Image 1 (cartoon, one colour):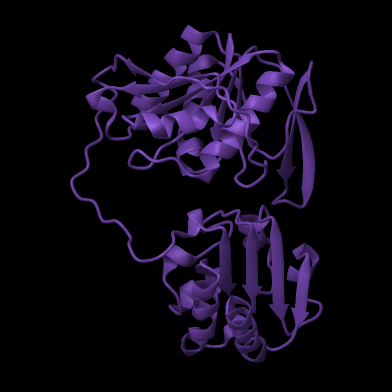
Image 2: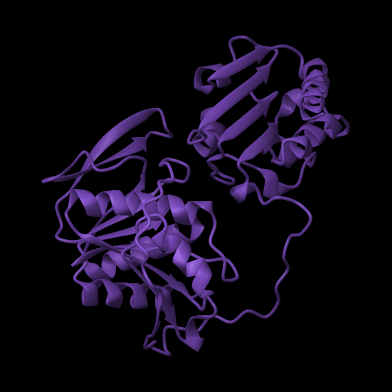
Length: 322
């Protein structure tokens, strides 16, 4: 029996969250005195796969079938559930990203497994199996007991450190069977964003709200994000006004992100917005209202006019980078 962890790949490449997941799952395997099996779906280079062994994977599997080249939630969930049953796995770990949110509940149903979404720490105990997660949009924490024989966990991004634990595992490619009635999704056209960091991948995010006053005032915010090799984001009112594109909208009704650093400029900090960014490692708030709710969530704050503070921040970063 082993702990299973699903490591998503993007065009055959893994990202930081994959190594974070493997580190987390490896620690759980250690708590349960089990081996860790990391797997991905789709062909991935051997050297890329070996990287998973660097962070604690005792076994590395690449599940392949032409029908799996296009992601279909039903087909992928069936393949993952079949693997879990074959391995006798009692714990299956996903990332709490868009893919994990689509797959984990389906796998949970197939395995009749209890599920805890968005966990942010190692289990408090394994007997009973108790996990720790944020609740009420990050305003509280909960200890959730999973009583089923099989447990499904999805890990909140940026909530566990990457730990090197080399195992020397040799990747295996496994041909799997796929029910053709489940793999029915086809892709007719693909458009990929280029030339900028994807918001969900960014380690640093600089975000603006109504305190930016108009769409004409974003140049220093964009420049700051560029200098920090980060991405730009905005609050919902800003995207609704058309000041910034909707794909930059973060919050409960937008993108849920967890960067290492989130700089909130002119954002008051409504509950709906904080629900989408509360998992950020560090939040820096810039607002001219010292009573703005954003300061309660921030580790660092500047009370001042964004139009005056931003240019000074840009100059300070330029000086440091000389």
